Length: 367
Image (cartoon, rainbow, N blue to C red; front, side):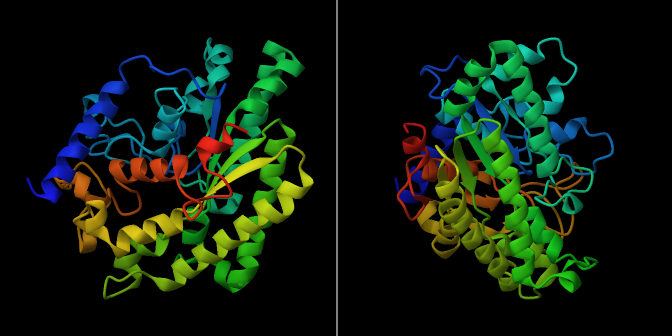
């Protein structure tokens, strides 16, 4: 058996195991009391399903073709996304439930004890970039509601203890960068790239500080990836189909500023604050540079879609999708395939300092 076939079989077995694990109780105890997830479509597990006026939804085929029973759940993926894999690593079996699915439910108080997923497809750091989605500010507001409920249930001291030992994951920024380069955007006329990055970072700083003031101590901050290389950008902005460097340059600048925020501003000034910065840009760059090493056959086209690079028509029920999804980096015009989400979480959970720093996620939850 050649190496490529062996790699594909390994992936198939691994995917089968992942799906089976969704139906059985976690074998390991939870490694943290609760998991709280903030961010955009990369970690949305169904919040946008409950936003009536939002056009940013994934609760229809072909999304979820590799999810248990082939169900489209609102995840922008052929199967599981990064929120699910983080939850599995921590012994929860998957992502916490989406916050909007819990609103008004009789079991709200008991459901939030293991954490909540606030992420919303299309969410930005800036309210103006979030459209009808839950902006980062709105997600933090909802977390404040959850924290108040925990304090009412458990008492202030116990709620504070639970939250301090829990893990907070923040995956946001990509939509803000896309907004800057939209053809009808006024942002470029209003801000230079550096001014825009400064605005994003100062806004995110206030959001992270508010989460901290509501008890968060362990933060996983996920940097923006090589967003200029996603099919939507390649197909719209570059006739050759190459990566769009001006988009990637802004992503690098944002990531550098985010790392500085975490290390130079938050850590020295917030007692007990600990973090892991996930170098998504660096890890995904290696996929583009050496795709075959990682088992990828296609790192340019979307698996699901139509038109140039399968990115001119989104992943809708009327289009076709590829059969060899484990060999594609992109599921649709923006989002990674299930296997990529898993690979990224694996890298960030136990990876080296070039992948995640100053410590990895496994080390973070041990602090």
